[in-house]
Image 1 (cartoon, rainbow, N blue to C red):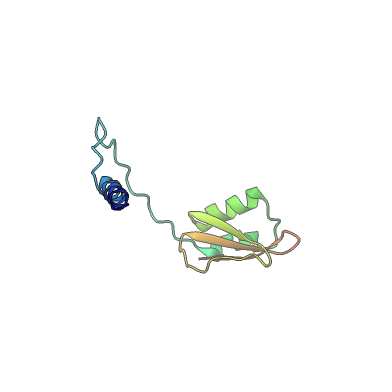
Image 2 (image 1 turned 135 degrees about the vertical axis):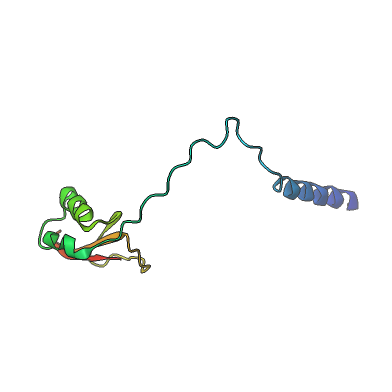
Length: 106
């Protein structure tokens, strides 16, 4: 019985140690490095034209572009949302009929 437990323990140690090995670099190097993208701070004033408009893909996309936001989030009534602030995100609130009722950043 002790031999079986010892073998099981040694197998577990070997498996854990295998996870600590380094992966060799890929042939040809890491490839070209991409330049970091520029931060796009959202300006909600530039998206106010969308308030009262219908929540269409075109209106949402245009509001994001005009606000200078990197991303957009459409918030529907009663929808659960995360509360972290993201200066690059435009939030468009819509009502039950699909009309945009507010545009703010975060």
